[in-house]
Amino acid sequence: MATFSLGRHPHVELCDLLKLEGWSESGAQAKTVIAEGLVKVDGAVETRKRCKIVAGQTVSFAGRQIAVTA
Image (cartoon, rainbow, N blue to C red; front, top):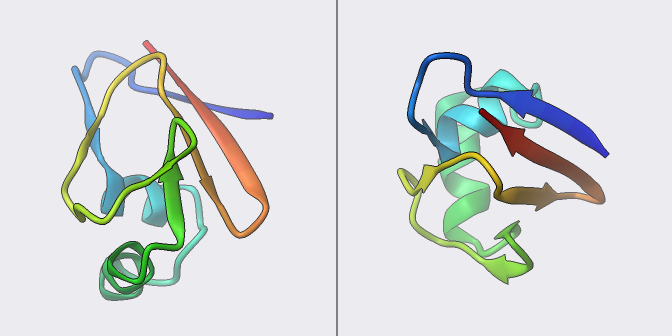
């Protein structure tokens, strides 16, 4: 499983995480797949586009998974 470091930031918005990881080509595409219920956070479908992802959470989409670290 891949990891994403928040660095000095307290959180990252879900749509931004998909974009930063290259899982979507644009912010608009990221928001669409989230709204369609294709993204899971900690195993549960997440439809809030700007959901704040914090260290310790796991995000999965299209067969890929990433663990968010501090």
